[in-house]
Amino acid sequence: QVQLVESGGGLVQTGGSLRLSCAASGRTFSSYAMGWFRQASGKEREFVAGISWSTLDTYYADSWKGRFTISADNAKKMVYLQMNSLKPEDTAVYYCAATGSSIPSYRIRHYPYWGQGTQVTVSS
Image (cartoon, rainbow, N blue to C red; front, top):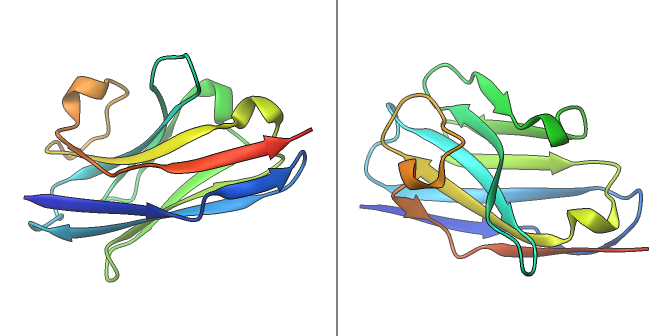
């Protein structure tokens, strides 16, 4: 079993930055990949970025490439999402997820493990 706990969300002004953290525990993660997703009110959950634990290769949805950066610390079993130049449309609940594959996927159904989510609100 895998447990994921997100933190770091909050209220920020337009143009500001936040760093989300995801603490992972449970089964070994050497062959896992991690993803960050977000879900805005009334919208579907969508892929933001992913990272492979073993290679630290990163993957991004085009919409956030350049503003958001995913990283991981294997020793601490932590995954981070650095979000810069935030916009009101970035307001959403952000979720950390783990897939049994070594390569991240943009498909929600490939992630059996999810955190509880952390709210990010960007004020105009």
